[in-house]
Length: 442
Image 1 (cartoon, rainbow, N blue to C red):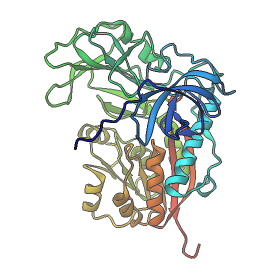
Image 2 (image 1 turned 180 degrees about the vertical axis):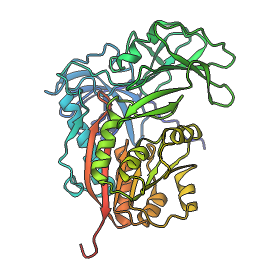
Image 3 (image 1 turned 60 degrees about the vertical axis):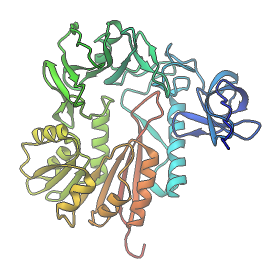
């Protein structure tokens, strides 16, 4: 007997009281029937009309947008961005919240994830609940920091550049992006015809005047001639191999952090906020307190930001091993760290390469894993190396909480946690946790 199809609830509207914030840029509410709603464009304590955007009868939860605000929070402001709101650009989650409220909400999410996934309270991790803004980002309500130095634009069928709508492939045409850094905005990506392109990424390097545009063509499309008002390198993503190839100019940009210049190849990872790299290096080094002559690991090392900072502080008799899976990032890291004789960069996945090194003990560990986290197996291995301190840099509080629980099982405790709002207007945060071994008998 064929199962009866469930009825779609998309478009249904419910008048609801909004509860606490949840990880992902939305808040929790319930229908009169008890079904959970994850509602965007609202704030805790509000009463709103929520329109369902995803879900069916019987689903564990529904997704919805607040399309009418019946009782507003004191933290609500009119969204400064004309392209924000229900059904529109999905890049920002909190345009409608005061800057201080955004940071408070992010802190509540971090605390909830730590408690739910690791059983840790803010007191357990030495954190007062504060989410720190980046330098220069503490602006009055209604003003938006221009922080995003890398913006990936989607291109619609008519060749107009825009940004994706939330959980959609549809393109929201925009005239400008309020959070784009000045160096990105001045490229004027939104004003050009990008017919034949699937996406256009604009990069404005920090600490140099390097600008780069990366084009991803649709199958069979010809590249446009890119003529901008300032010098810019142009790259394209290959149709078959997915690699990034030089069209014009340098195949990299130069980024500046911790007093050093770093070469970052096209499409390579670098922190998006112009103050992020320095902010995170400072937090990691203050937490680790490196000593001359120590041995350190830098895992998921990218182009060598933390490895270089460690090498500077460990001196000629210290040593750093970096591990990174990306081939181009490894090439860049080796270039960036060529002056340090006792720095080695290995290519491959951490869980595969680290056991092959034969390393049985280290003094310090830095890990900055991808959004999914390091995972139990890797954390178990790291816990066996006896590091006196570990710095865990995390872009996802859920993955951080899971891995902190694994470290606890391996005999480590969190000495301190710092949380930074390096992605204003969005739900994202960056965390730096410093761990140390639990003393016997403690």
